[in-house]
Image (cartoon, rainbow, N blue to C red; front, side):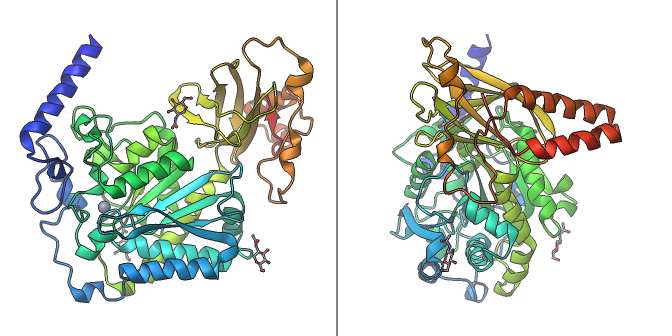
Length: 496
Ligand SMILES: *[C@@H]1O[C@H](CO)[C@@H](O)[C@H](O)[C@H]1NC(C)=O
Ligand SMILES: *[C@@H]1O[C@H](CO)[C@@H](O)[C@H](O)[C@H]1NC(C)=O
Ligand SMILES: *[C@@H]1O[C@H](CO)[C@@H](O)[C@H](O)[C@H]1NC(C)=O
Ligand SMILES: [Zn+2]
């Protein structure tokens, strides 16, 4: 019954889309006079509120573009950066725009271009051509990290424990044309396959910029990301679309974690959280106004990547002399969001007990219908979660026995490795208990992910239970006692 109604609903949506838009280009929301299909996107003034379409926006004059980098100046700045900060960065291109501009990415890490069992974060700027603040801020961010690496703790943590990928502009052609869409006038943030809007799944009409991002995400194993927009001041999180196209709160399986991440950004910002329009400076995308074919939902569904859409200035195209202050307002938020990938969540590696090889297994949290996959090369996984709760972590892989364990996630990240036994193998204590500790070399003092050093699961579980009791009883003495205990054990990992 449910299936039938779902199918009918989708057919109806498809029909609506087909009837109301002569070409795909317009269906995906070009800016100039393009009308989204009825029922899609045009929610009660929401568009005007978000000021995403150009109707009442002043034309971008030469005067306004003064002080902003042109596309060739940006390319120059990227190359200059890679020379200046050669030992903590590399640059690479993920493809070309319609007009042939390379889509340059800066990777920042102490081992750029090398695989490490560390989370990766990506920033994408200038998705909409007429929202250029992001591309400027991202170059400022890269340079700031380069200048403050080794002196600032957050910068050092990011360089050492995260691989940060920065794409300053996804839409250089739109920027050059001073408009929202790309050179084909397609809104790139409506060009991705969509869970509710099947017409977007037609492959051949996908824009080169969109295709470049999709390939990048599929290959990149990103843990989280953010795209930068302008026209409002709010951190927006999935879902961006709602099933029946109505404007309403549409929660993703990881709603709680997304709200945590969005709030982290908002609260670290100068005044985003003081918003009158959005409580706490954050919003569910579909509650604000539903969009279809957006990059954010696609990243979460198909890339295993927790993406936010950050609206970082009310004014889409402010005077260039306001950029330093906007950078100042956003710097801590950007750094904290990236650093949250090592400061929170559950991290670890998954191996086979048979030969010790890393396994690209799936990690699930009981009660959350979502899988995060370990990387196929190193078997590392990074699962973002709200701190201060207890979770049941389950790991599965075809051909291996599923394993799980319960953890209490505190204010710090947890480290949890798994060793899976092949289905048919009989339990062999010797192989299933020993860790693969040799991968520890090359790790440093700031160590967040350590490996097995003979900590027994029982002790860990005992500590978790005790901490939980401590939380319940709020007994100061007991807590103090346990805290001492915790200090000894909390950074130790568990291998199950
Ligand atoms: C980068 O170079 C500086 C100076 O040569 C050196 O002190 C630092 O350790 C290098 N950093 C990395 C990550 O290699
Ligand atoms: C945040 O500060 C900017 C600059 O001072 C101001 O224009 C904007 O209205 C403020 N927004 C909120 C939500 O307080
Ligand atoms: C994770 O792995 C499963 C199969 O093991 C696959 O179906 C799924 O698409 C993967 N998810 C991502 C986000 O790559
Ligand atoms: Zn935008």
